[in-house]
Length: 98
Image (cartoon, rainbow, N blue to C red; front, side, top):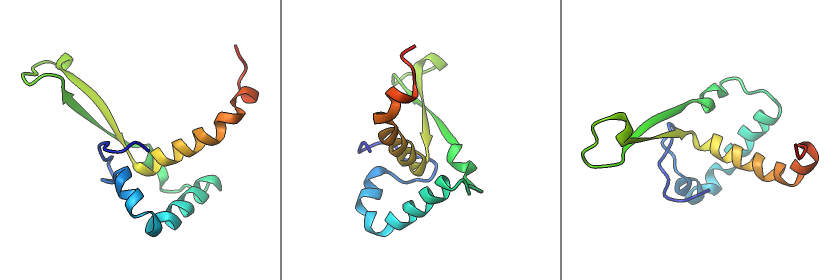
């Protein structure tokens, strides 16, 4: 997970998770197990994102003067990263070259 990124709707950053990993490790394992078992009631919030507009210039006045970013939950970021790392070695067999 990259450092110094903006927190998502949950308010947590990668630095927080790294610093508190011994305390939150089991919580992450439990969440991932529930996602794996498809018992994800209440996980709809993981699909939510906050949209923020960052000004490109100090005198931003129109929509074109802003850059939109999506802030997603840290658990969703970690889960997506985990899936991508696990799927990467298998993608050649799962997806055709076309």
